Every structure is written in C-alpha cells, then in structure tokens.
Image 1 (tube, protein in one colour):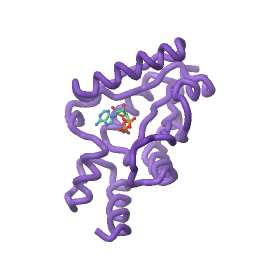
Image 2 (image 1 turned 45 degrees about the horizontal axis):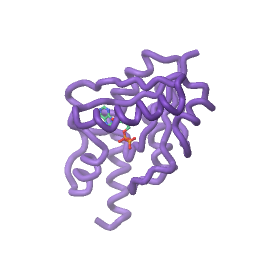
Image 3 (image 1 turned 90 degrees about the horizontal axis):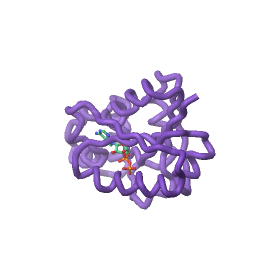
Image 4 (image 1 turned 135 degrees about the vertical axis):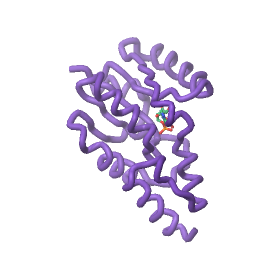
Length: 162
Ligand code: ADP
C-alpha cells in the first residue's frame, strides 16, 4: 500500500490544489491531505473550516483522507506509514524553497521521498493568496475555486463586515 501525504495550508483549497490531488490519486493507493496546524501563516479560514471544506471537495475520491498535523512533517509521515510527500511546483520561484525543504526532510528521514507534481499550465499562476485577495475585493473567483469555496469566501468576508 503506497501512502502519500499532501501537506499544505489550503487557505482555501483552489483548483490548482485539486489538480495536484487528482494526479497524486493516480499514483498512490492512499493520499492524506494534511492541513498544517502549526503554520506561522495568518489564515482567514480556521483549521476546522479548512478541513471541512477539503473534505467536501475531495469526497469523490475514495482514496483520499483529510486531517491536520502538527510538529515535524517527516515524523507525521512516518507515523502514517507514508512513503511520499506530494508538493506542487508551479513556477521557478516555488523551486528554491521546495528544494530546500525536500532536502532538509530527506536529512531528517531518509525513507520519505518528496514528489513534485506540475499542475495544468492554466493553474500555474493560481495561489490561495490570489484567491483571497480577489474575493476580498469582491472579484469573481469562479474560475479559481470550486463553488462551495466561492460561497465560503463570500460568507467569510460578509462576517468580517467587508
Ligand atoms: P504551503 O503553505 O505549504 O505552501 P499551500 O496550501 O499554499 O501550502 O500549498 C500546498 C501545496 O500545493 C504546495 O506544494 C504548493 O506548491 C501547491 N500548490 C498551491 N497552489 C497550486 C497550484 N495552483 N498549482 C499547483 N500546486 C499548487
């Protein structure tokens, strides 16, 4: 059984994330989407909200599980008996950070391999932060995220009185 971890912040999950997920599902027997709990990032969606939204958008995949993790990613991967960490590579600017993380993780735990997947070209410009910014300014995020995320973003900004 080949298990992969797909870690990230997913604030919120975008069509780019889902493109990578779909590719990972074809390669592994089980993919665990893992929301980083101890992220230093300020998120607009709470951890529970991000997990709930990820569960909704990934429910069509039987092999996919969603949970959160804290602490070292490689230790978590080891506990989950995962042999791979999946990351998306969009542009050259992603590369330096991802390369550094992958090598550091390998140093910490030799048996977990980082696997980089490239999304469809149409998603190379897409990031959660672009989606948050467009939504905040009342722009249409229809092409960037699934409908359920679109609604969640609208609700979120309304709650915050924007
Ligand atoms: P993190 O804070 O760990 O970077 P993100 O949720 O921003 O979390 O991203 C999680 C993973 O998904 C990263 O590997 C990132 O490169 C990848 N990713 C994000 N957006 C896209 C996209 N549009 N296309 C492909 N991969 C993406």
